[in-house]
Image (cartoon, rainbow, N blue to C red):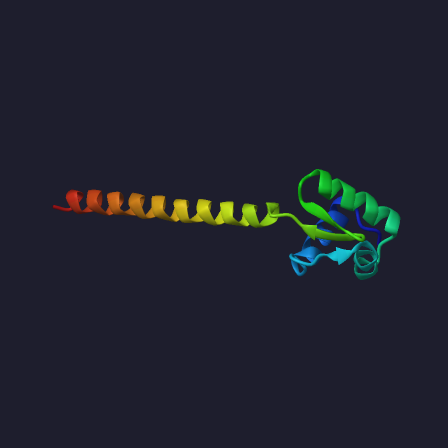
Amino acid sequence: MARSQLERGLAIVELLFGHVLDGLENKEICRRLEESPVNICRDLDILKAAGWLQQLGKGRWKLTEKPAALMKAYEVYKNNWHERMELYDARANARARQMIR
């Protein structure tokens, strides 16, 4: 079954997560994903324009810092949410103690 452009793009990003520093050659990406060079070249260009990939030269591609920055942003959001939830729970507990006096 043929993959959509979105599915191929996600597969490329997932594949390159394992090669963050050194990247992979275009032909290796095609081989590993079992996709045509035409489709992969188009997808690589789209991901580059979106700021997700960087071309290293000699046909090698790697992820930019964008995916890592998004993961960090998620971590900050999650920690902030956790801290806010703890404050909310503390206020609710204090209010509950006042109510049972």
